[in-house]
Length: 489
Image (cartoon, rainbow, N blue to C red; front, top):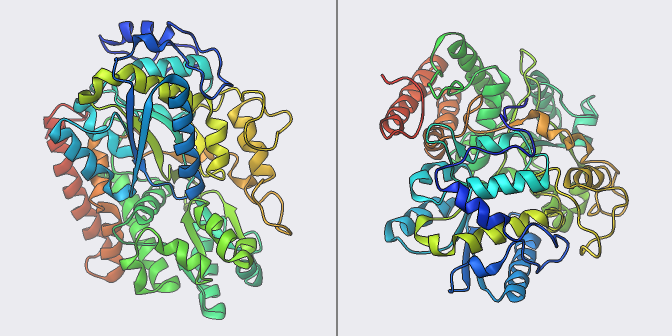
């Protein structure tokens, strides 16, 4: 599933400002990757104001924030820069960023998810730093370009340093008792055996249909796994068009059936923590989430943690298997912070160069964007992994032999997630993420569509038609601003 037009070592698309920016980035080379405080290019090109303010969302694995704060401070101390890091809830990032853009003042680097696309006119072009990273760190996960580059405006609006796998988490003992020890492989099995587990063991399936992150993610995965999507590759809304409409209606009908046979009304009021909490409390047989619920269970409910195993996406009725990037780490630099643009980009490249540490201290929650990044030698703050020379090799070694597994816990539980790059895609699939599909996401149009059909508020056909009209209005507005492609109505 390769959608990248470039190969490692080739230039990314650039703006008219990027050539001079590349010269600054190249000025000092990329030597000294192993040294945490070593600059990747000279600091004498930077503004005299040696401060750097970073805003990012509070990580779902708390050890990451503790590590990151120390990592940023160490880099700052080594380079004479005062670095401050502020963490806020992921749900507050868009409002906070919007407020800072309006005030024309705030943080120099802001970490967003796919929402970064909507701020394209207000951010510094990131073509140079993306180009430099691709040249120096080698292979890149295909999806990264589609979540940080706007092909209509021909602008790299963000630098995506990492992402998180959205996987199936299931309770092995429950599925084993139901005759399927390795968990479900298809959505039909989830429906049939999930119903059996609920009836015989009293434990429900945990897939939300509410206005929160995980419900948003799984609604898309199910739609794609039925061969349907919100938009085509050219930014046209096709949710209610032709064969795509038929497949979308089938997917909505499935979700209504799944609700009635395997779940309870609680799923309509879930928040982003609800499926995690149900899994840890022993109230869910299967959820779609990252590995964070499992990591939490290791600390609080070790018996449950030992019973949690992982799967890639389930197969839809036509054989499609897709998962959305669970979360991603998109750094933007607001235009009001242009005075510290080079300083910000140096820090971003420094983080990318040391992403082995980000992976480890997130307890493998962070998956690297630049899978060919060399693993620096020397003491890296974790046990050495012989033979792992790149972040991808390191990731696969840790997924095969999890350094955080509990005593007595099964080996290789994360191994099914090694090929995640093959079945993970982005908002806007089969095209690019863009401001319009981001607004569809932020306004929860798809989980609302699923919920209305499941509750009986609308027939599946009506729910799809309503969602399509809402999406079309959003797309028309962004198309009118020249920020997405597609045909004008």
